Image (cartoon, rainbow over all chains, first blue to last red; front, side, top):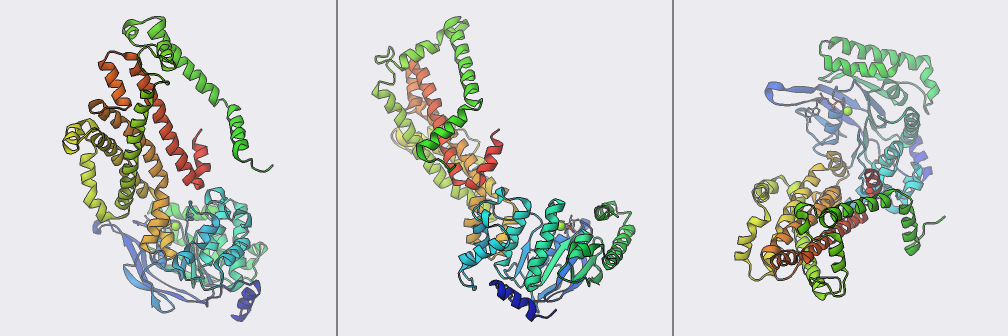
Amino acid sequence: MTDAGPANMAASEGIDFGAGQSRMELKNVSKGYGEEWEFDQVLGNLSLEVEAGMLTVVVGPSGCGKSTLVNLIAGFETPDTGTILLDGSEVTGPGKERMVVFQETALMPWQTTYENIVFGPKLRGDYQGGNLEAEAVKLIEKVGLADFKDKYPLQLSGGMQRRAELARALINEPRIMIMDEPFRGLDAMSRELMQEFFLKIFEENRRTQIFVTSEIDEAIFLADRLVVLSNKPAEVRTVIDIDLPRPRDFKMMSSPEAYRYKSEAMEILHEEAMKSFSDSASASGFMEVYAKTGD
Amino acid sequence: MSKPTGLAYFWYTLEQRMATPTPYLTMFGLSLWIFTYWLLCEGLEFWRFGKIPGPVTVLTDWFARDPFQGISIFKEEYYIHIWSSCRRIAIAFCIATGVGVPLGLFMGWSKAFRDYTFPILEVLRPIPPLAWVPLAILMFSGFETPVIFLATLASLFVTTLNTMLGVDSIDEEYFRAAGCLGSSKWQIFTNVVVPGALPFIFTGLQISVGVAWFSLVAAEMVSGDYGLGYLIVDSFMNNVTVPMVIGMLTLGLVGWGTSVMVRQVGRQLMQWQVKELAQQDR
Ligand SMILES: Nc1ncnc2c1ncn2[C@@H]1O[C@H](COP(=O)(O)OP(=O)(O)O)[C@@H](O)[C@H]1O
Ligand SMILES: [Mg+2]
């Protein structure tokens, strides 16, 4: 896939999200919580390269430290050791070049869909892409919320809230997007629709993307590259390149390749669980993933 | 059908209301209550209840052109009492809100500011308004100022504390989202802290307006020339019990009215929550 293609596509849509593709690198990042005598090492020496224009999916059992990792990348917390680099410069705090869509919905309940979406650029007063209002309306239509522009988040369904949040992040034209189990808690149908919708948006301009999930099927369906984490303290166990063609389709999930990727990842996750079976908390975390995948 | 406006909308909501059991249950409860009151005081003259003016006596006097014991809706004096109390409440409530809300917001927002102020608030808060009366009389001259001071004090504590808890109640996610979107500290204050604390603030204001009435009446009883509290205690001193009961019931009705007003303002300001509130109303 060339860089020119997707950029042209975005231009023809009239919305240019192509703020250039960025690359992120995590070097020997570790993080723990608690007092010295009950220290809880959550991330242990985690190194990861997130390639420019790629959809990197991070998968790991729940409780292994995925959200902790997201908080570090977002800049809400600082690593105990190691560095996080975006295009070579170190991450030191939150910034609009790294947009996070959180695990729990974080739309401001007191703002309408429209107000939520223009919130960031309006406050910073730095919107580059022309008329902010017009662009926001276009984006709202794109995420299918035209009829809900002036509704409050409490009046939207879970899937709609996620789409509004996606739009709120996109309008800031971040260099990298980070999503932390964004479709968790949606029913199966809306979840599939959201995955397809999310991929459509991603494939349009291939903005560098980190997607965190604990569901292996979701991970394989979305990923260019799959990063499998170990149990707590989390490290990268393996990286699998997913060579399924794009645009993706749910039918691909029953192909032999998809099956091979899945069993490869499952084997590692299974190993991880076995290793820490005495540690019952982590084991139950693993069982959750294992049970969800269903086979 | 488009949404009706103005009077048509009022009739529409009234009709909707009348179709629910609420108004009938309210009526029934009220009648039962008045009947018991009548039975105790006038019907049976049960024990010492016989000394209390019953509903028939009270209502007759309340709506009489020429009341037996001096107070009715046709007497100018009655309205002077109501007006005096309402004016004091309005002033006290405005001061308490104007000081308490910003104070609470800053206490919730800034850890350092809370460390300075919270202990003082916690020490002063349990002291009941009545205990402040002597100090208030020493500090302020005349009738008006000490009474307003006392009414302000109690509601100030309620408003401040509720506002502070309101800020505490705001989910960390919203601060993070705002930070991620590049808001400055002050923008976070105006766009997250203030609207996020609003539901708690209005809960606090409803309590605070009630507390203001409590302490106002207590203050008027001790020091005053007019006002519902004064009316109640003055009637008792002069051995006219009917105006005393009229004063009490008027107080209740006016107090209820003020908290309905606060609630309505809150609903207007928190449209985003209206649906949620409607679900809680049940
Ligand atoms: N702020 C914190 N203080 C203490 N422990 C924390 C904190 N954040 C996360 N943890 C611990 O880190 C572990 C991983 O949490 P998290 O990153 O939320 O996992 P995941 O997102 O993979 O489910 C958990 O055991 C949790 O108790
Ligand atoms: Mg998580």
